[in-house]
Image (cartoon, rainbow over all chains, first blue to last red):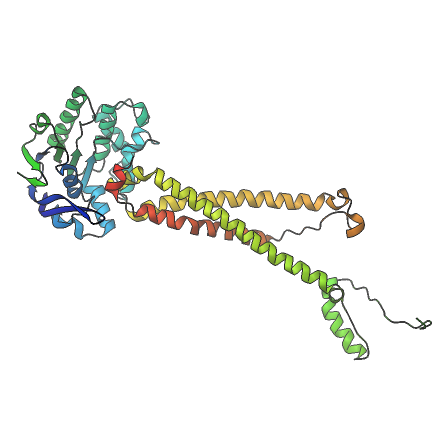
Length: 221
Length: 194
């Protein structure tokens, strides 16, 4: 499903060069639950962004579902992000002016090929699935952290993505809400057969995965 | 002047003053070179060239006003783009492409421009109409200088649509740079923006 070969990422700040990823090779099978474990600053988030067609690597190739994502045009890559990938971020990243339902509908509205019944019914169904069926019309500011993250997961799932990429999904939550989120992600992985990649610095969470990839100083161990 | 009962000139009153130039031509032809025919515009040449100059000055002033308004639209949109940096990053992460992001800001700027032009156009037309009805010259006590009590106003539909259309097009142009800037934002940088 996901294949990365010789991925390097170097950030340049004027004349200063900061290598974050130093040659990553990995392969993640369809339907697998993989966690990427490492201390902060190891390059976990950068790797996730690169795998998710969001950040172009300085060197190396990434294949998503068999196609070289960074060889695509910008609009094709955006389409791949919309249809193949669902992102879940540490800080939820919901749009504050929209209700939970509207936020969840957004990826469906962006893609021209919307799910049967339209994005609204799919969004309602998903919000019900994540336990927010009664809070459809609440804005993010009126939801707790755990609820916002549930809404963000529902948004990630609205276009039935093949891959779910989660960047410290529990990093901003108390341990109980965090556990609930990981349970939910695991369920999505099993029931919707979505490939799940979770980036975390907590060994406890990483252990739930089928496979753990340890990253340190920009290299996989 | 010692001319006795001799006549030095004859005034001709015509129905349509705008046809004066054509009538002058005919008269001149009929009278021959010994007579000199002058229309009302020839006799008030200085006044008309002053009015022409005034029109040019007004055009320059209005262009500057529209330019300032455009910078205002562009400035507002640039601020919105900065404010919405994170939201742009979110939209990109869920699959919005560059042209989609650009459309959002062009549409916003266009709405501001269109609503503003329409309100301005309606207010302007109303004000011009009111100016035509209200005896402003008389109220200001200038009737003895100008010979009439109100300002003559003529609202031309063509001018009206041209002004509004130009304002909308200029506001559309003002949106292009901020919208292009927004579409080029790096999504990862944008998501980090607080």
